[in-house]
Image (cartoon, rainbow over all chains, first blue to last red; front, side, top):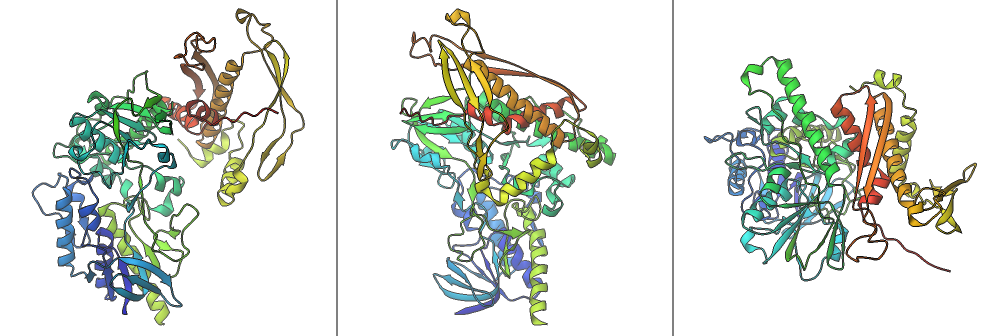
Length: 414
Length: 188
């Protein structure tokens, strides 16, 4: 049996950032990693995926991108080397190949069972990520057996798809990226569009992530939100893609490329897919929301007095979905060979044998401080800040939580 | 646009605090959020019928009202009927309009927007070859519904558009007409 004051589960950006902060506080700890550093980035992403945030924003405590393309977007192998480099530099005490199978609460601390044997710790940091499992709606059970069902975690590239057309359910970051490349490979693509967040890649000559960072939107804290924080945490991912050309992919460009847009998938029965008649409103909501963000950028520019540094404000075409949106599709007759569920992701806590989950299976926490003593979680959407689930958000959250963890240890010792 | 002092002075006749309080309470007790709505309908004569709407179930108990409402329906003379009341499909339009309008008022109150007037005009397309059984490929129901809102309020054009969009997002009848629902019919 091994013992460490703190055990971090997961050696991705969150776990490594936490390890860095615990090391600077001289708190002995171990990082248990089921595979290698950056395992999810290495094994659970499709070929063409790049980060949605520019290289300059790919930064962790004491470490940042140093290449010659600050405005570019890292490929997955570049993300993996970036994180491996960080792990080496920070000498993070990683145990690779240690898959956690169960965590139980002890009188003091936690018992952590792994395939390499048991561990004990006083403090536990869950840094296993927010996207371990694809969330698939229950209506998926009605899919005809002849149609292949895939999640974005299984999808690799268009050539490996079964023959035929592809219906993609969900039009957030994953859905629009897959629709774009599968359509470009010559397949028929039907894209089911529900609630989504439309954003241009660039605005007034800068990347949208640069703007969000500059106006302070990424640093908004969970405990200062005027609106409902739970709603903000459930927001779908931004409709963005990282490409060397910095292209904007939105529903207009996808439709122009021949992707067929339909409403939210609301039924699968007798081989027929049924779509909601709410497509126009979902697009209207997203257009209005995007325009509010762009207006707040313009306000920030005007207030800062830096207007001459940026291109002038400009608008974007309202989303045009046409008037003849299909409400029903016979999947077999239409030759749809594959359905891809780009309907979101959720963490996997199946190994966590501590009663900290709510009735929806979400972990109960206050800004990452879990409702069990000495337990912390990281990397969830809007956990402490809007950027909590971004690579750039790991550092600030790790600093806060490491401070809390350390204070807690000292109090126990006193 | 939305400040506490502004929302204190605006009045659209919606008790937003009560609604927000109910939302918070129901988050803690989701079983109390299970409602059942009811209507009963008596045939009068021909295509004329009269519905009675009274009690409903919600907040974990039977909820009774002080009175029973009646809603009549019939068909117009071009259908060789008496035209003594609106057609059922017009009542569906009325239901959609009322639901969206109530939503606009509630959301405006919440967002601190004073409304002066709200008028919704609705039109729905129907190819009656469907209900007459002339062509099996024509559906019985609406081909499309168009809703036009004319709203005067102390807010920008985009803020008013956002009210209408949010009202659709949270509308029960909008959901009922845009999404499929299982319907179970039994006979004694």
